Length: 413
Ligand SMILES: Cc1cc2nc3c(=O)[nH]c(=O)nc-3n(C[C@H](O)[C@H](O)[C@H](O)COP(=O)(O)OP(=O)(O)OC[C@H]3O[C@@H](n4cnc5c(N)ncnc54)[C@H](O)[C@@H]3O)c2cc1C
Image 1 (cartoon, rainbow, N blue to C red):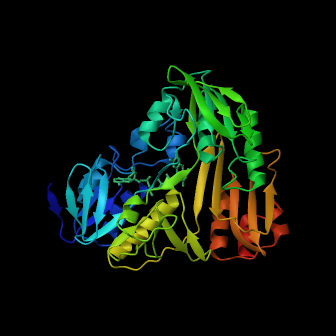
Image 2 (tube, helix red, strand yellow):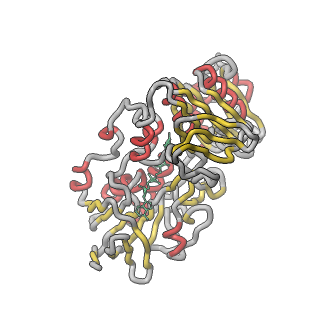
Image 3 (tube, helix red, strand yellow):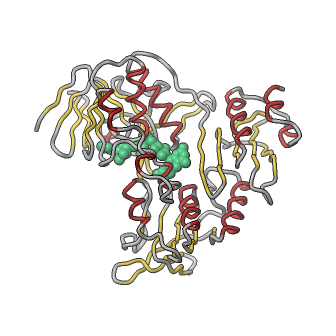
């Protein structure tokens, strides 16, 4: 076993979205000591959103997915340790241990371990042809099935499943989406938006089945040939993609006895229950002042902003995290942009025509105050709403739905 000591050094566990941002922000905030990033994937940090969009479609290569060129890490004196899994954090000696028997000493530690796919636990789960989507490697496996007429069953009508369905349809595949809930994207959007996406996918030729619970996968010679439902239906297919959510990677933190509750518990500065250990991104549970409660989010914006906050705190600057969450999803020619959290809304106000058109917004008000927006091909509504949500703006529903009044006028009222 070797020990690598970096006096005054920062170690980042994970080499994803939050990790790459942390390197940038640590240097920008004036941290001059060593930085070492340890990630278990082979690739340097890359963006995941294109994995279910343009990269899956083959429209862009890995060079457009990578977050930074290799020179960035060298220029910023960040030692990139890839293909290396961190197995333990020993807080007493400020050491992290890796699966290849190495040990690294930290002064400050940033946990940016992200999340992993939730696996489906039904008979046949391990048949060849049952896929998930989280990494570049997963995309390569999926693309091998992308030929005209191939039959794909998508298990889960969340945003990743629907994005995969849209790309596969564009490539001429025969696509069926199976969703257990009574509507797609039920966890993130209002029924108005779910119904809109169900209509669009049907118009594009994707079969959407809601209220269907997958009970198992069946195959021949070890290869998947059909998906069977608890309701007794059988869906013949050549391959399946399972998109039923994620689990935050909190085990390292929990084993090191850091506070963990639905994510690694951090304060508004990204600090865990150990003042020398910080966490950022999908793996955290953090306080949000705008909504007055703790959140665990799965989004690029959250990973970037939390990494900025944690890096500032590590560099000795207090910049509390207080952001309106936002997120996007691309399906066909539609850009869905979501700002805020709609949980607990008392009124949904529609601007535009979701039943016939391809562009509209749904504003969510709680006692007249804007708390969230779902905007489809409506950049101004999204942009203005982000600002209005942060301001806790009280808005007139009649004006919001009136398209003759611009968002600028509404914002300035
Ligand atoms: C297909 C797909 C599409 C998406 N689309 C969108 C979108 O449109 N918009 C949006 O806002 N968000 C989207 N997301 C979510 C977004 O990509 C994540 O929220 C974001 O990547 C989180 O960043 P992170 O740094 O927390 O985690 P990650 O980027 O997942 O990075 C964590 C890294 O840590 C590594 N790691 C974990 N444990 C260890 C360990 N013990 N040792 C070493 N390394 C470890 C992981 O392997 C991983 O490489 C999408 C995600 C996926 C998978």
